[in-house]
Image (cartoon, rainbow, N blue to C red; front, side, top):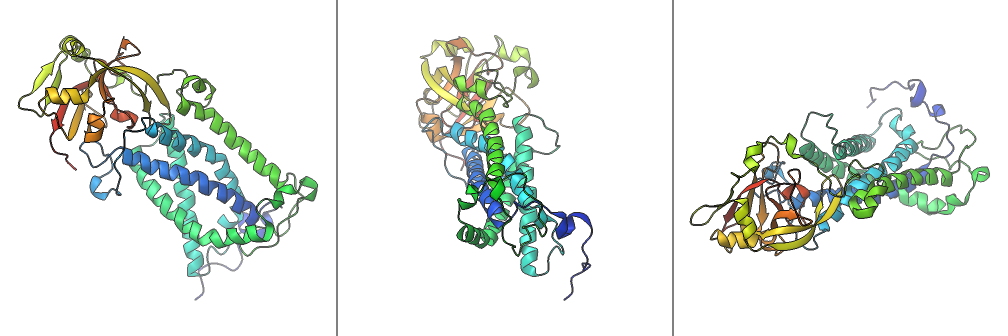
Length: 421
């Protein structure tokens, strides 16, 4: 069957003579692909772990439709820094692979303009995998980058789009890996894993012709060696890594994160009080915390809460944008409040905020999270009353959970004897 493509390719990049670099070839593409395999693999795994940490099966926790969600695992409270670690890796490595991805796309550019686009069903499958992989990777990295900057230039729900984009990315990634693994193994077998790096600029030669057309038909003289290209790419990735990694480590390292948007403060604020629409009087003297789920509802003023036995805990907040901070918190154990409400063996608690709009104004915590002795309804931080921006009059602080599940401006706790999952 003759394909509906002219025999003569269009001018420009569709013709083999257009590509002149002597560096392109299966080995270079395999090296860059191997590095991306590790980097993007970590990003994908930590991304799905983050989604699992949201415990989307519980009321109020899911933005993605639970009926269409992938299976998730229970999320532990030990160690308390686990979520901060996974999201620090997710965001920091996700940003650092951008220079490597750019180099990888440059290395395979002739294939993106191959003519004809495909000649057999196998080639069509390969082209489809490439199209899905390239588009989903760029989409994931681009939307993740602007989300970390709080620059919402798009008009769709980031979390849902990022989640389903990740599903498409992983499927395309695995398909592309299966198709290209023999090519990678052959390139390493024929040229060695590190041997081409020994050649300096004077000894840089094109790779042998390959069936995929990566090697230039009429290469120009080299202007940089392969090891120079990889060093330049690695330096770019390293600068991005250093420029963002400090926000995940926190403390004095935050000042090193010169590319991070929240490096100025050791206690960043994602959502200040002024933008959430809570009336000022709601956090004034009339404020009451409601405990529900027991024989009758109970209400307490902030002064009454402060008069109860206070507990201390040093816990981090790990944010989905990649930053973390560790603070000293003072407040009431949620387990003690459950007992006071008449539900001492509560299996779940719904935490509601004074915030009336947006996501996660009401989130659920599991039995393990609720009964962890470090889980607090915090009234103070670093020995001082919470500020309005940090959740005054009261907020929850739970070890190991996503930052948005440490609910600010808490107004009601509903304890349940049975889990809703």
